[in-house]
Image 1 (cartoon, rainbow, N blue to C red):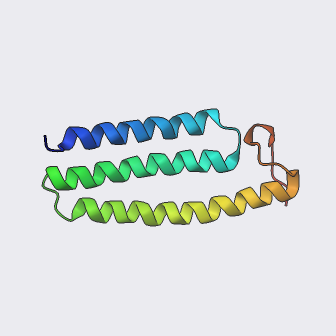
Image 2 (cartoon, helix red, strand yellow; image 1 turned 30 degrees about the horizontal axis):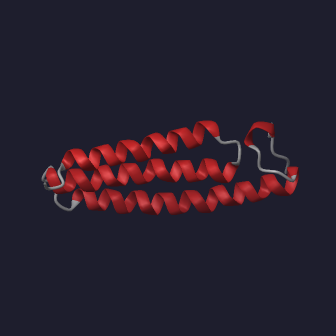
Length: 102
């Protein structure tokens, strides 16, 4: 049995579902960011799978690399925000944060 496009799409759907579940149910900001990373990784799997099986050649790989770079920048900015939240509130529970002070 060979691995086909359907296997990649099922894996990406499972990762996407776990990511959305993590984003919607977690109260800790770091865990929400981890859920967002799962969603971005599922998009990368789709890009690579369609590049391999859909004849996109290098375009899917370039899109996946762009998403990886975007995710790295997002993590850097988000962690700076989380550290600022922790400095002001002494916790990172996203439900209890109503505004950021300067």
